[in-house]
Amino acid sequence: MDIRPIDDRIAVSPQLAVNDIAELAKQGFKTIVANRPDREEPGQPPMSDLEAAAEANGLKWIYQPVESGNILDSDVDRFDQMIREADTPVLAFCRSGTRCTVLWALSSARREPADEIINKARGAGYDISGLTPRMAQQAGQ
Image 1 (tube, helix red, strand yellow):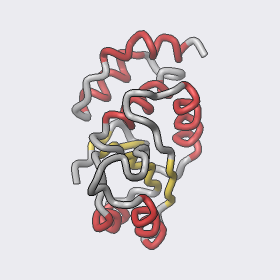
Image 2 (cartoon, one colour; image 1 turned 30 degrees about the vertical axis):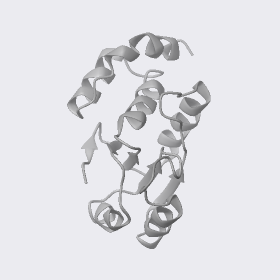
Image 3 (cartoon, rainbow, N blue to C red; image 1 turned 180 degrees about the vertical axis):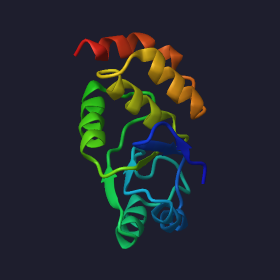
Image 4 (cartoon, rainbow, N blue to C red; image 1 turned 90 degrees about the vertical axis):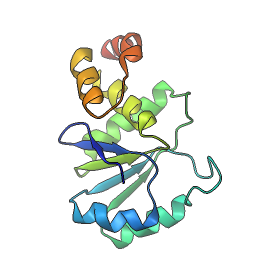
């Protein structure tokens, strides 16, 4: 697993395997968010298998599939509500972790300055500086 903490509420990760779920529970995660559509690419574990493993290990499972490269404001709205209400810490995953980081950044831009968000994402290994205009747009909402 490649868990990348962003802040005390959320970490992101590339694709999880079913056998990763028990370890996530041992590490103290409370909620798993899947931002990757089922069957996005061959060989990806079925979301139903990951969900069953999460539930078997006492973790809350949230499935919010988002198309890579096409994050809509409605996706950001859903992610924002989820992250504010979720039992934390949350682990969100997609193919590489970037999609989850972008969702987090855009939702966080409603409450935090863009430079702080960019620095947190950079600390997790993601360069989201190109999102600055869209974060400014979110800040105005």
